[in-house]
Length: 619
Ligand SMILES: [Zn+2]
Image 1 (spheres, rainbow, N blue to C red):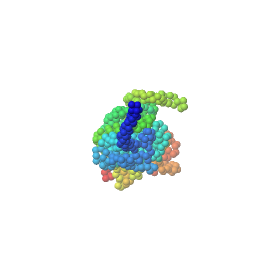
Image 2: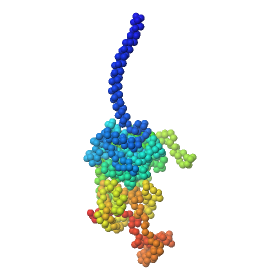
Image 3: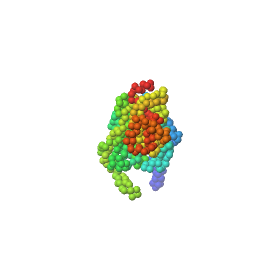
Image 4: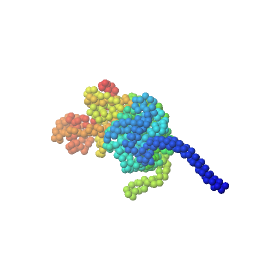
């Protein structure tokens, strides 16, 4: 018993041990098998997840990849999926290729093939201001999730996506920790402007940057139905991770304006709120930092992306993440905003296409030309009261600068009721002609028409005609350079009929075309971003010949023998007493009224043809 007792436990322990060994073997074997399969499976899943994590995700949501890393990831997506095509659409000033991803469920990657389908084309661009790069990291994840993980595939049901992960590629590589003083992350970021210090989001009309000319070529190839342009905003502090801009204040036709306001934005606002990312329209206080001064909106100049798209009869969405939110919050909010926006566009695809077609037909019609065309707007004094989710702040008098210091100390959320000045009224309107003619020598202007997809014909032989011309007075040029140009900041304009001689090769731009709304914005001097205002025509203000005083003194006496001249001169002296005894002014008056004077001085070289019959001259 003892033994047994002794042995038993031993045996029993042994048996238990043996049993355990057996169990262990079985277990080990099972575990081995399981671990093999699990490990194999997990490691594959793990490897797959690991492989397809973006640089931004791997960095713990703190860093953004450089140009090379970004392009490599784009190429891997292309290799991994039939739905993705990686290509480029031009080169930057420093010679970098501009990256483009085309995402299509059927793998179409040519505009003509997509045009055969009922799909809409959505252009999504990030990094036009390269420091504001949230859109690149959000779009790379979005594409990966769609084509590798098959998530959100419905976004490709009725849409082909063109994705520009970095637009300002040279600015993107001019990176560092100190490029955006107001912005929280990523750890390093690029710079706002291109290598030649041009702001691409002021270049849509004047097209001085090679990157912008490449963009226009891409645009007219695909004629996207919707643009999403992703930024990070500066300005005040508030709760919204994203604010948005859409051109709904005057430069678009009513049907498209209403759709943007009442269908697109309303739906996206609701779904973003539900997803935990409340959004609000672009925040601009009448006094820059002060919410109490009220919000205002405006009609965007076509020098900007969404202002330009409006004139091409296409809606666009400006996404502005808020600089003071951390990078992860901003990228996640952008991702969600893209999903919600593209989802609405998919659902509305057919309707959107019909509205765009209708708008283009209208712009090409005689009715469009017969209405007065609004060129510029100003904010009216009417306002409404809106809720604004801000933060509590104190305004303290700075002991350093003596100015007001807006102190957002405790991030205490507060919903304020503030006035919103949301009405715009047209301040400059213009009568549209049947055609504009740009004389052949203004080639720099004519060349740009091709990039806009504007159609024109060339004058076959030198032609003299009487047509409507603008003349200018009191022209003031900007004393400082803006975007590399010397802008015309104020002037008076008169329109009259003059006889002009046009050389062969002059461009005749008829207004009966779908992109007609852009033409006056380029060629009407009073348009806010016209080529006249950008200084394309500044040489017309330069007098190139002068009379010597002793020659003019003699000429003046000869001219005064004509009673008409004498009468006119006396009137001028009476109207402008300051001219008396002002020899240069007096002599210049005689010079101006003599046949020696250059009649082209201060005359706009672009002419307007109002009478369609006159155009038959050029057939
Ligand atoms: Zn920006």
